Length: 373
Image (cartoon, rainbow, N blue to C red):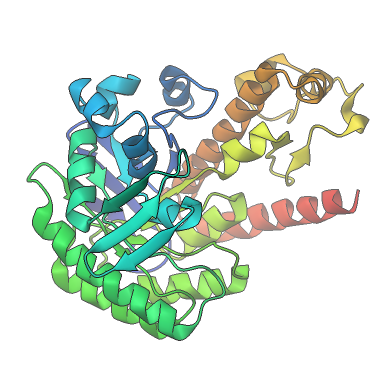
């Protein structure tokens, strides 16, 4: 992997280009989440047609089902799911701690029980690197310790210590074809995040992820922790904010120098009947849309908005029809990918500051108004 910074510096909005063996990716970039080698309800061709050039899969879920051997024998995850572009794999550390019925962490790794059948498993940092090698992903993440919010300082410090040790071991275990990012942890403690960032930079990773954020903390704290962490990361390496995808968070994070994002936010929201617009989220399941013959958004050019009415979508969602979930997912991913593309254009045109103000004001005012309805 190669990252070329085309505009911007250490902080503030940046433009870059991520070059991989499977294609180039312009940054800032949003990566749709294909947790189990599938972006829910959509085909890979549809995801690419929406503008996505890189997606994310989850090593934890694929390790449990269908199994690393199945995917390796299929020629890797790209061949397995018929996706030709780059793929980033999350190690699954967050899922180990959040989904496992029993989880114990030690210096050597983590022991957990599968959320599928209760079977016991042990994974070391080296195991996780081998699993991702079997998946054949382009960018891999090391096993890390993600703490909840709120979390005591002692627990956060221990997570930083273990994550740093596992990062060193993961780097040593990585195969030549694997690009491995370091993950900055530290909970809600700015000094721990500074310490974690500096330690990872000393190891010389080709990219850096910010983990353990957007887990329930206030947005003001999220943004201040972003600023604190980014200040200690090198300008010539990509910064990846894990698990963040709300429109206002994407804009605020790009303003603070973040280059890459992933989140289930747009697709999960869609499956529950909520669509994203420039004027805030819209809950299409509401009965007031039963006779609304307008599109979700008159200015949106996605297939859903060009073809179907709010009334039809409300009917599909209320009836539990799978087509409703597909159509809202198409819209929400189109909206998110277009928003990030628009940000790139605003940065390139030197008008990001004014664009940010007007975009956030409109979104937040609309969101507040709809909350009151």
